[in-house]
Length: 230
Ligand SMILES: Nc1ncnc2c1ncn2[C@@H]1O[C@H](COP(=O)(O)OP(=O)(O)OP(=O)(O)O)[C@@H](O)[C@H]1O
Ligand SMILES: [Mg+2]
Image (tube, rainbow, N blue to C red; front, side):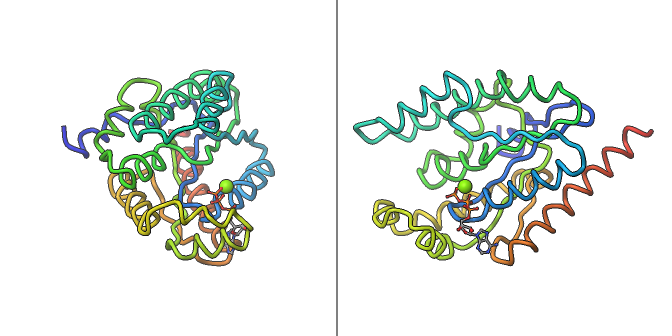
């Protein structure tokens, strides 16, 4: 199976009137900032909005999060991949699918499968196919209706991180081109899942970023409305 064929196994959950979105991009791209703004926008449209973050969100996921945080030795990329997939499957089953059953719900993930493709698949060199194959069983085959990839260059990530007073040695711990590889990973994910992933220029005023996102969301809502009117 090649990558395009693997991609056909993934699809968005079908709960009429409910939506699943994800935000993707390297550190400092503006995900948290834009999630807050989109949540507020959707709540004003009377949606019930839940924001989720992996690993965690379930008792099992929290244990996995602690396992990563408390690890005394480096975690192998394969272990990391499966750990994220485990936490993801549990969060999808226990929270996402259950909550999407409630009318007018929007679930927003702060990072999802495209981050796994970028981090474990490309930056940690496991390969995009390996990441996709790990996700071939339900519920891991579920994808968002739309994913917003906030694209910024690696050096802007560094600048924004410094402004945010992140620990100084953080970037030094990573290889020199680690962030360039991450950007390459997200770019490749955006090519593979070109219908789902909307690449947004994250290097512009945050109000303009928000407007770009809202335009994509509105176009999806109109399209869904037209389909349900048929
Ligand atoms: N469009 C923008 N222009 C300028 N600064 C921005 C913009 N968007 C976000 N920022 C600032 O950049 C920093 C990082 O933003 P944010 O925390 O939203 O990124 P993130 O993608 O959630 O990062 P992380 O992956 O580390 O959680 C914050 O200080 C935020 O205020
Ligand atoms: Mg964030």
